[in-house]
Amino acid sequence: MLHRTPCNRRANCSFRREIGNHARRKYPIDDFYSTSLVNFVTTDFVLFFLPVLCIGWGLRGLNRTVYKFFLLIANLVFYGMTGVGYLPFLFFVALINWGTVRWMEERSRNTRLALVSIAVVVHVLLLGFFKYYGVMVDWAMEQFGARAEWILNPTLAQMMMPVGLSFYCFQGLAYTIDHYRESALAPRSFTDVLCFLSFFPTVMSGPIIREENFFPQLRTSIVGEEDFGEGALLILSGLFKKVALATYLQMHLVDAVFANPEEYSSAAVLVGIYAYTVQIYCDFSGYTDIAMGVARLMGFHLPKNFDAPYRSLSLQEFWHRWHISLSTWLRDYLYIPLGGSRRGNRYVNLFITMLIGGAWHGSSLTFIIWGALHGIGLAIVHAFQRVTRRVRLNSLWLRIPNRIVSWVLTLHVVAFLWVFFRADSLDSAYAILCRVHAGTTEGNDFPLLVLVATVWGILLSFVGRGLFQIIGRALRILPWPLQAIVVGLSLAFIMNLGPDGTLPFIYFRF
Image (cartoon, rainbow, N blue to C red):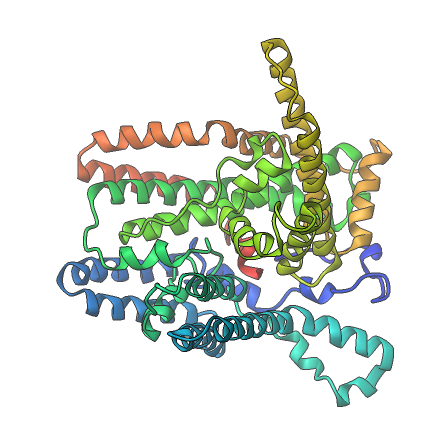
């Protein structure tokens, strides 16, 4: 991820011991994400969004065609702020998906299959180039030295993958595959497809929306009082998670522990693992909350992307609650086509799906291992459930301990697998796990407030929805002017809780 402290000597391994460190490098543009309008937690974004919101409200009720083109321009301006040079990739993905669906019209099934297959290959090659070109260059330079420069351009390896490419590629593929499966669906215009892929609340880090989540709402013209209230609450919820919890945990323990675990006691490293477990949830679900809130203020209802994942009682349930738009995409467009639970070996299908899910995140072996271990874990859970399906615990005294043990086990499996996701290298992940196992009291300790924030972050999975509903009902009782004052004061309070220069969202890199 982002703004990392240089790693210890274990992380300085050769390419033969760890592939893909290039995916973890800090780019100068990281600082740009901290201040630019593409980061929701900046004044620049507010200055961009308020005029777009006000003009959009006016145009949406007057002329839907004009509103659609205005929204497209706003989307392109927003995404163009990541770098004008990345706009062609967005246009290219939109063109491929729009063109494929157009060419599939009234074609034979074999022709349609060939066209959609070509579209899939093009998307995979595009993602593979940006995610793995640096790995290929590192390997070639390691093996052949300067001679590799005649074939591969090392400067291209420093290119940062266009922000959101993974998300809008998957979104575009869903559009194309859905039209392949349902030939009765009418093709959209190129501007519609481009607007769909570039929708600025979701283009950076999702959620990955489907065609039916977007186009019907584009035709409506009503933004009600309920949209304003829930949109504002979602934004406040996301800001609290990001600013007050995720950024605090990252700056006060997580970055330091993962950079130099040998300098901390075993207890501090263990708390650091728990803290990152909360950080990545609060960071990513916080982004999603803000994206949903921004879209809600514009009259769009986005699908839920997180559903209290840390209250899950199994890995299977966890993936039903975590990054729902990605997990359902992998299920619908990868796991089921592989055969799912009906054709082939369901355990192999699960493993392949999660392995590809890990590779989607980046080229580092740590991502691959993280995905593979989740695949193995899901296969074990499915096998265990098949064996115990006929065993029913009718006694309350048996069901409650069983649920507690299942929750504790699931939370800890998820938390320790996050070590591979966060670590800079396999050596670094190994050092962190060994430090926990050592049980030493030598080294730096952890701030008590970090432990408080970590516990509160986990409790959000249990009490967050109830708190949201209570606050929402209380806010709706107030008149409009008072609602605006309360929201403004809450916003100022939350922003004051965080440090200066709130860090970029973790999933901007994916």
